[in-house]
Length: 198
Image 1 (cartoon, one colour):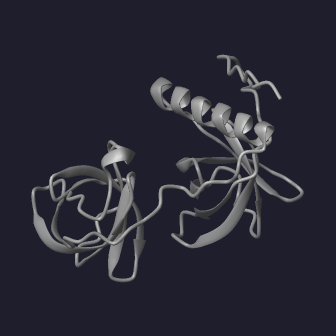
Image 2 (cartoon, helix red, strand yellow; image 1 turned 90 degrees about the vertical axis):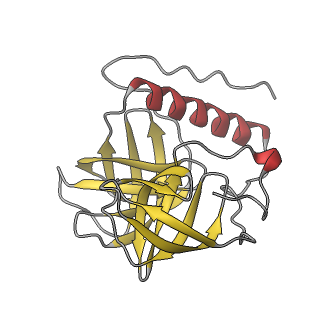
């Protein structure tokens, strides 16, 4: 089967592609819910969901294969809701590339692969540096090429730029006793293993 050429053009309505990806989304009250995508474009995402957030509410979602996306609720759907995203050009192009890959993978019948396997690092003790310069001792629970979960006393706001060890990152989630971060730059997959240090 030939590869599908998915072309995302700059126009008022972005081309949507039907890609079903499981994930979770968080509302302004910080509660999380499971979801799956109905379709995605570089300008928005339609979700099948168990709740229907109000129009205009900010939503942050974590999707398998895509990672973190955010936007505001644009409309309600019979099965859920849709968000509108305003992404900078670089992020929009990255998302378009990811969607092209996912559509082609589905067209070719390629197996579903896991979003960046998480492993327990051999060296788990590290530090978390906050934007104000404060440093806190932390312990890595697990790491992947794109992010990490760590136990730490500090709870910087979601979206905060932080440094884990010597690695720049952004806080993407809170949980009891710690935080999850997404690295500013993924580690090269070919050199990533349990010996990787941050």
